Image (cartoon, rainbow, N blue to C red; front, side):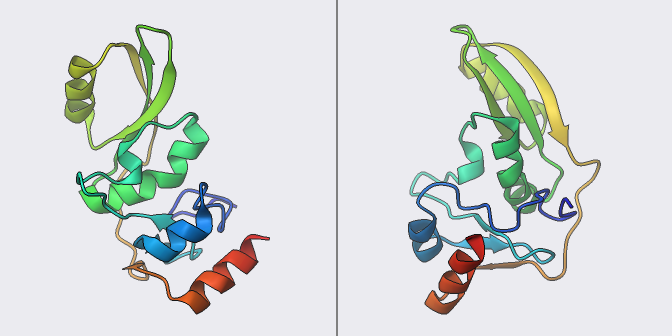
Length: 143
């Protein structure tokens, strides 16, 4: 069943890359509904994981909730195609942000692929760095 808060049916799927390192060293959005940890850490350039392109719509959906939470709106996942025929998915706050990105890059096609109908706050959401005991429990639950 898909979680109404974080849009995933796999409550321990994230982090996808170097999960132990991410859980130890990055701030996590903890879904108040299914308790999935989603990296919400900001790098030195002010970017978060959701700011980067994704290979698939399914992977982008795993990070959409963090974008919604940070921007306090229902962000959208757009399918983009470059002049070199590269297809990827990117999360944007709104159409204006997407259009600004398209102007700066060699994008020839865009389409909105997924967006929740509205933004909703969830009272049990927690933003924090996990403790070692929490990380161990989470990692064991991934198996």
